[in-house]
Image (cartoon, rainbow, N blue to C red; front, side, top):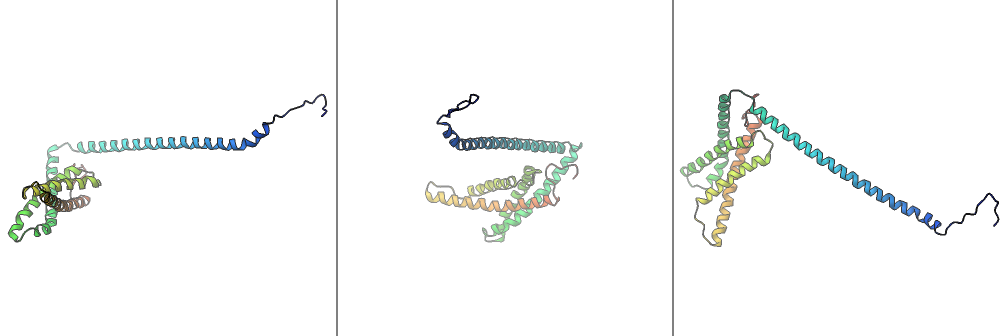
Length: 223
C-alpha cells in the first residue's frame, strides 16, 4: 500500500477492537457500582439526619417538661393555701376512687359471702384500699393524664399487693404439688379481682380529671 509523504502509516493493535467491544459491559458495571455507592451514602446520611432529629425532639420535649414543672412550682407565692387546695383535691380523689371501687367490688364480694353481715367487712376493706389508691393515683400520674402505662401500672401494683395479702391470710402453703397449684390459682384469682376493682377506680378518676371536676397534681395557678 503506497501513501503520500505527508501521511503516516498507523498500525492498529489486535486487542483494540476487543476493548471497544467490551467497553459497554465495563461501563455498565462501573455505573452500577457508582449508583450503589451513592445509594449507600444517601441512606447513611438520611439515617444520621433521622437520628439527630429524634435526639433533638427528645431534648425539646425534656425542656418543655422541665419548664412546665418549674412554672407549676412557682405559680403561687402562698404555700399554705396551695397545701390546703392540694389536700382538698386529694380528699376528693380518695372519695371518688372509694365510691367507684366499692361499687365495682360489690358483685365480687357477693360471690364470697352468704349473708349481709358478712358483706360489710370486705366492702370496708375495698373502700379503704380504693381511697388510698385514689390519693396515690393522683400523686403518681400528676399531669401526665395520657400515659396509659403509668395509670394501669399503678392499678396493677395495688392489685398485686392486695391480692398477695388476701392469699397470705388463707391457709398455709404446704410442700406438695397440690398446695402449690392451689395457692397459684387462688393468688391469680385474688389479683385479678383486685385489678378489676382498681381499674374501675382508675377509670372513674380519669373521667373526673378529664371533666375538670378533679385537679391533677400539682394545681396550676389558672385552676
